[in-house]
Amino acid sequence: MKLITLVSFLLIVVQSLDLMAADRPNIVWLTSEDNSVHYLDLYFKTGAPTPNIRKLAEHGLIFDHAFSNGPVCSVARTTLLTGAYGPRIGTQYHRRSKMVPMPDGGRMYPWYLRQAGYYTTNNSKTDYNAIVKGGWDESSPQATWRNRKSGQPFFHIQNAGITHEGQLHFTADEMESVANETSPDSVTPFPYHPDTPTFRYTQARYHDLQQKMDAYHGEYIQMLKDDGVLDDTFIFYYADHGGVLPRGKGYAYETGLHVPLVVYVPKNWAHLVDVGLGSRVQGFVSFVDFAPTLLNLAGVEVPAHMDGKPFLGEGVTMDEVNERDEAFGYADRFDEKYDLVRVFRKGKFTYHRNYQPFNFDGLWNEYRYRMLAYMEWWELFQSGKLNAVQRQFFEPRPAEALFDLEADPYEINNLADDPAYASAVHDMRQRLTQKVKSLNDLSMFPESVLWEDAFENPVEYGRKNSARIAGLVDIADLSLLKFGKARKGIREALNSMDPWARYWGLIVCSSFGKDAKAFYKKAQTIAAQDTENLVRVRAAEFLGLVGEEDPSPVIQEVLAHANNQVEAFLTLNSVVLLQDLKGWHFDIDPEIFPAQWRATERSDVNRRLGYLNP
Image 1: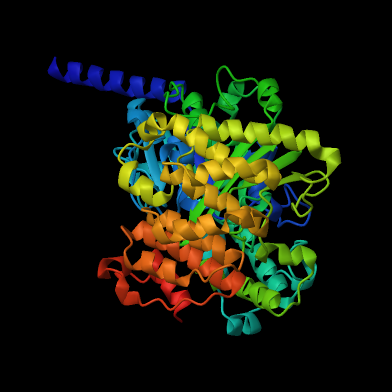
Image 2: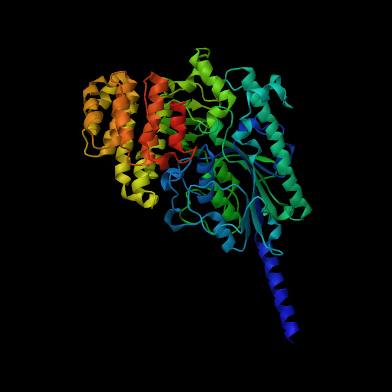
């Protein structure tokens, strides 16, 4: 009797697992690192052939407008993990200065899948900026779906590092001695790159790596076939962000944000997709949408903390998806290099808001400049051997830019000052500003302030400071006016009791440059007397950028009394800017910094000191 009961129980368990598998599809994410749509022939005829990815597309969908919200690994992967915008939840910096909690008590998406009975595995990159708990059954270089229980549905990520930026950190000797499979003569240089043997060799090498990545993922597609689960498995192929030739990864251009996305639709779950296989989807999707889509395909309710919305699964029509035509991107700190850019894409237009336009794109970033092509580009600029388009990378940017991507896919012709596009500029400016304010964009405060006050609960900090953030955005947007119209607002900001209003007032002054000479004396007073270190730095930076006063004494004093490491490397960013853009000299003694700030070779303070004191 006991044996019969046991057998009956086991049959029920097996039947339940079979039902679970029948009720929920398997899902696999095949990711590649650092490659935008520009490198695959599925999207650009000059891209590399990727036959395995193309086969997935023949039995699925190609998304022509898929975007990473951030152009670098940890920021992009945390957006995928959380389904939330980085500047809202405090995960916008690469690398993080402090891990932050998941927003509003939420969980990473694999946790929700596990609660629904999925076996969840990750092989194996994480690189998250948020604290995560309890998401994976296994996360390791050995992880596969094969250790699940019989009949259990699974979710698996397979990451290919083959195309990562580090693969292009070859030496000059290697470039001379190792031939690529792709001929350098066969590649088409990007229009903003100098056409040199170094750039051609680098692009050809990357062309080869795309094909190796495709072969790597082909092995895992074959594993799914061999295991007999392909007909029950959605397969997403996508890149974690763009890249990786210069001005790709780390920059909020199309080459940094516009990623390939192909979704294989399994035979037994084709009813969840209401469009023919092999179709190209024109609707816009971005990384905040991936977790909601995954959960929706799995029949799991999308939690409230996620900002995105599903683009596949029950309740989603492809007609509605194809009506989506907006995406939002952000670029903040990349290791030791600071920036603050927000991008709004709508239809064929993309609008860039460069909140600190004097921080030129090519500002020194140690990891970027390990690539020979980066170093050569910088050297050619210094020797005056670049044309006007190629020089843009090393010159201050406009506060705003509008690009028509149909006519100008590489974003080199700014239309913001063209009267014919005044209406489009106005519309896009309003849309981006509304987005920044609605998110309570935390980057309106310096990272050091967030490190001190916000990172224990970034979302709540943003809510409490929502009106203040909106006011700082309004001050920052004074740089979009003619100086005569902005002057009154700048004066009010510089006289504000709020230090971060003064901070942004000075950034606006730097954006106007010598047009803001009426505020030289006020800036000198602030540089000498303000109670906030970073406000003093911005005042000295303004005076140094316009050549009015040597910024070194004030900035070196601030560095000697920095309140924390984050404040120090934000200040060091200004040092590198003032040295490389305007030629100011700084004599910085590393011993002024606490030893723990310099404890590792790759600390942001050490990266800056290594460049300033070679």
